[in-house]
Amino acid sequence: MAETFQITNVLEGIREAVSFGKKKIVGIDIGSSAIKVAEVSVQGRGKVRLHRFAHIPLPEGAIIEDEIIKGDEISTAIEDAIKEASCVGHAVCFGMAGQHSITKKIQVAGGSKDEVDDQVYWEIEQFIPFDIDDSAISYDVIGENNAGGVDVVFCAAKSDAVDNYKNLFEQANIKVKIVDTNIASLINVFEYNYQDKVKNSDRSYIILDFGAQRTEFIVYREGTLSFCKEMNIGGLVITEEIQRKMGVKYESAEDLKIVGDSSGNLPEEVLSIIDDVVEVFLVEAKKTLDFYIQSTSDETIDHIYVTGGSGQIPGFIEGLASALGHEVSIFNPLENIDYDKHFSTEEINYIGHCGAVALGLAMRSGD
Ligand SMILES: Nc1ncnc2c1ncn2[C@@H]1O[C@H](COP(=O)(O)OP(=O)(O)OP(=O)(O)O)[C@@H](O)[C@H]1O
Ligand SMILES: [Mg+2]
Image 1 (cartoon, protein in one colour):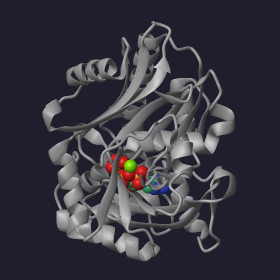
Image 2 (spheres, protein in one colour):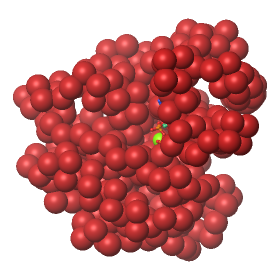
Image 3 (cartoon, helix red, strand yellow):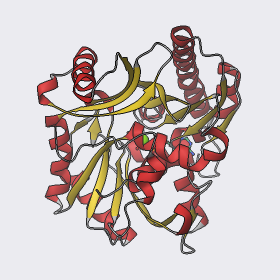
Image 4 (cartoon, protein in one colour):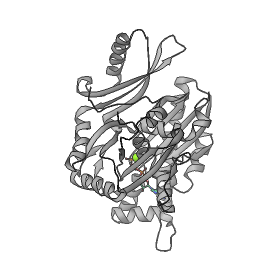
């Protein structure tokens, strides 16, 4: 098992977060569209406070389908983001996501620690699409289940993919302390922010991280991950369609999508591309939800929380609510996290939509 890889109890995220004391960890989300860095501290009564945050956009095609294409540019962006944020931490925690990693809840028979170890490794071998001997694995026993066994959440990542990501930091002379998964990080930051509502609830909550190249569809239930599916669709498809249909470069297409034309309006052509992509997305999201409900008979979905930059697509929240038949709101990662005064409204708005993963990674213990 890779020394640095840890899921850290998904269930115990808050306690882990409050236990890291003086050891400063910089949380770094290597998103396919931007690098985001965050640094927090834990104040009295375990209250998390955000001190530093920065994001640096990545050039077009820096990461494609989880493969690092423009390593030098990504390394430089990591360095620049840490500098821009003026981080004081000397070690980082980053998260794996996508096809080289998996985070999943499974059921095993239980027994002694060694027996559970054996069962978990056997089960993991069935699920992961890569060789278990070349993987970093970590798991967490959640507790007994109704079937008389125990529930376990595991994270696994392909070792050479982890190494490729770690090299990005080494190139910038930055020490990696913890390798996490984005899914575990999202669950921790979600639970921390909405604990009063969700922690002791017997309802289920969906967290949807709608990013540039992928979407995480996570079901949080009774203090842990209940289900998760990674959908290979994100807002980049819209940008690419704008590039293709309107004959513009990546940066201009992003601008046309996000801020519109010179008078700040989204051109008809852009709106129609957005509608088409969102429609495909909603069908996929509905299929995923139906699959989850069919396989678990869970009828207790309470609310859907959306994070990720693409959640800002005009009309998306309303479209999702109507397609999935549940209430939808933006997942605010600063709902229960205080922050320093120096942040501008613009930065807080960015963190509110795109900063959840980096915040969750920053909240990891340095142990
Ligand atoms: N106001 C907006 N309207 C529509 N799309 C937006 C808006 N703001 C940002 N986006 C889109 O959100 C995406 C970036 O979101 P985010 O930062 O969550 O992705 P990421 O973490 O880099 O990607 P991934 O998680 O898929 O690797 C980009 O595709 C960007 O164009
Ligand atoms: Mg992301």
